Amino acid sequence: MQIDARDVFLVVDVQNDFCPGGALAVTGGDEVIAPIHRVAPKFQHIVLTQDWHTADHSSFATAHPGKQPFESFEMPYGTQTLWPPHCVQGSHGAEFHSGLHLPQAELILRKGFHRDIDSYSAFVENDRTTSTGLAGYLHERNLSRIFLGGLAYDYCVGYSALDARRLGLEVVVLRDACRAIGLNDSVGTTERQFAESGVLVIESAELFG
Image 1: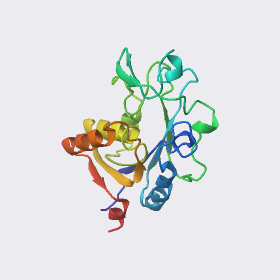
Image 2: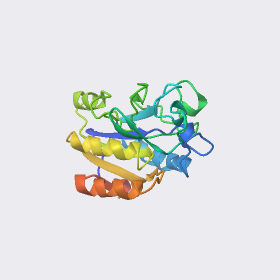
Image 3: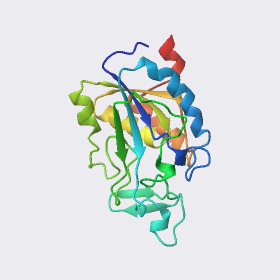
Image 4: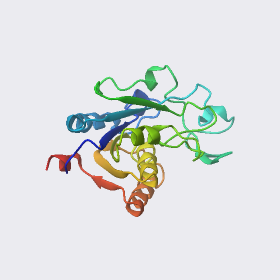
């Protein structure tokens, strides 16, 4: 697969709290770094996302007395999974993993900083109306195909990929550059949605064929 000037590599949430030892660790989360580094030199354009929550964020189970992490809770915008506190603004857990080295990235997009709205997608927050501004950024720069890697495959990567398709972008997910949380049937649901919406899932080696 050929990479050209219209392509952008979106590296999602490779942060300490999503890696082993973190507050919301994804199994093998740090294993995404090596494939991300392998493919990054192929791209002229790289964007990083960073989960960036307030300490009292409404998506945290601790904000709801009697609730436990991974339970569902009805927010004004719909059903929300409650999480352990993670990626709190300015904390070590919110920092990019020290092994991630992408100084050529052109944009760091922080999401989830509105206290009352969680944000999985890099494009639209969980109320499905609040834009992050990424769509406009890509449009202004004539970037029309998006490749994704990072954490987690079945949440922030998946939501970002599906929203990119809704916005009319071509979307490719690099499966070996992602790891999943695997909560209930989240992986299966994500992959069914990918198939229905036209998200292409490949291995990063296919970029070198």
